[in-house]
Structures are given as C-alpha cells and as structure tokens.
Length: 247
Image (cartoon, rainbow, N blue to C red):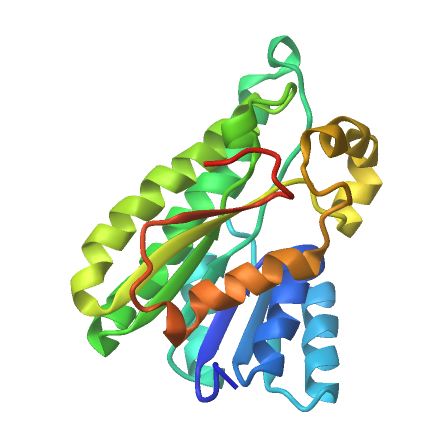
C-alpha cells in the first residue's frame, strides 16, 4: 500500500496506459482521478476501481483547455483531497510523413503532448510546493531516441517533455517535489492496436526482448517513480522498451 492516503491525478486515463496506471495506483491505496477527453470512459474506469474497493472519480478533460485544466484539478482536490501525484499520460501519436504534415497537424500534436504537460503541471505545482511534497511523472517516448520515420512532430513534442521535466525537477527539488519520465517503446494498447499495430513488425527486431510491450510493463515504472520510495530520483528518463536502445 505505497500510496495509502495519497491522491493521484492521471490524464488520458480512459483506457490504455492511463487506465492501467489508475488501477495500479488504486490497488496500492491511492484515491485516483481519471481525466480524459472521453468522460464516459473515465467514469467507467472510475467505477471499475470502485468495484475493486478503491476511491476514484472520472472527469471529462480536454488537456488543451487551460481554464478547464484548472477547474478539473480544483474539482479533484475538492472531491478526493490535495493532489500528491500527477501523471501526464494523455498523448496523440499520428504517423504523418514530414512532407505531408500541415502546420495544423504539428500544432495539434504539440498542444496535446507538450503544452498539456506544462498546463497540468503548472496547475498542481503551487499546491505541491505548499505541501512540500509531490510526484510528477511524465510520459515521453522511445522515438525521441530512435528517430523512427513518420513521427517528426510526435518525437519533437516528447523531446520537449524531457527538457521541461528536467527544469521542473530542478525547481521542485527544494520543495520535496520530484519530476521524472517514462519513455515507453511500442506498447500493446487499444489505441496502438487500432491505429499502428503493423509497426510491431518494424520494432520487434530492434528489441533485445522479443515480445510486445504490455501496459503492465509501463505501470510498474510509473508506480515506482510516483511512490515515496523514489524520493531521491528526479529529472530522470526511464526507458521501458525491451532493449530497443541503451541510454
């Protein structure tokens, strides 16, 4: 019960890695807020957790909506308590060749992946400083380090998340706040299987561990970095990718 009496807010928690993370933290004692643009999915996930005996709330959130983010974080604090853990998981990963990408495509990817990480972090940072405790875990990606084709905007946004997280770690450290990253390889989630499942054929030969990544592989890393046990770990990027690269 590493997270007993703690509150976690997780974006993009309607399914995939976000939902799996919510269930993982709730199983270890956290009260969990599932935030997702698909409010029905977030609510359904919260109900699953409640059936498991946990405390959870599902809220609709567009992570590109600055005012909405502030309101959502206030609602979480009012319903569950002060937020101890923020997991910035919401992401958008279309595969668009560089010459086919419009500026509107680029801006949308940046808004969902990078701008939202800033907005959600800023929304909880002041309260974490006042508590002199906080765990912020952001999601980057293996593509930052591998340069796979067709994901120029996605890779750029996730590289930006790394730089941003390191500065948050520096500014938050004196106040007991850690900020770290998990950089997954290709993971077998609903979204991946619906949109880009064929890319497993390209990725698996690059991995030293010859199987598809599972959500549980990622949630274990997130849970450690979100826990009190990781109090001396900050500003770090943890690659969970089956040995696709060593960094």
